[in-house]
Amino acid sequence: MLRILSVLLFFLMPFKGIREGALPPYWEHKLQGVDVSHYQKVISWDTVAARQSIDFAFVKATEGHDYLDSLFCRNWESLGRLGIARGAYHFFRAYGCGDEQASHFLAHVEMHPGDLAPVLDIERTDGIPPEIMREEAAIWLQKVEQTLNVKPIIYSNLHFYEQHLAGYFDQYPLWIARYSDETPSLFNGKNWDIWQFSNEGCIDGISEKVDMNLFPGTPETLNRLKWYPVEVKP
Image (tube, helix red, strand yellow):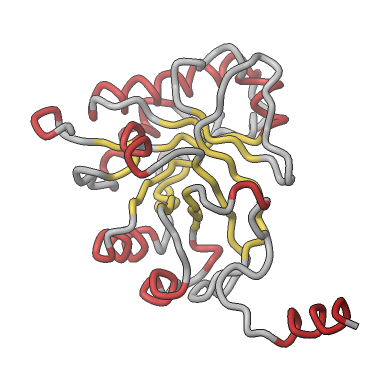
């Protein structure tokens, strides 16, 4: 009888915040974040901040050498206003010039002290030989690092990373996607820095399903992935 009452109470109690893509139980007290693009449509970041514990958010900025996400500026400004740690990412196209893509990203993303390091999203070869893809990606990474004096973060899914990227960019922080309750384990032994564990998150203030991420550290250790001008680094 007690078990039946417990189940009934569970379903009757109001539930707010993340309704799907729930955290693995042993990660409940880690830093939580989302990543968004125009696919999530117009987001009410004030609602997100008021009803959920969101510690950081990544926003799509650019893609290829000429595409700018239509909601980047709105998302970027809202996150800055609310004081949520924010990062911008570039979706890499392997058929494009790495230098042009880096210039495109840098021209549209205005970094402020405390923003998360830029992210290079690499998850397809676009029919280009993998070695050419890696060469152009390396050019993007080097140009952004030299311009901002911070190592960009590489994002990829586990399969693509192990097939095409493992062993080539180990000096960069890694944000890995693996939709599972089990933490990613990379065959080359590299440690990941951020884990995208679900693409089925339901967040108050975001009308579409959203990617969910975890950082296995504290706000202080998250600072290691942030950008500061040399003269104001913490």
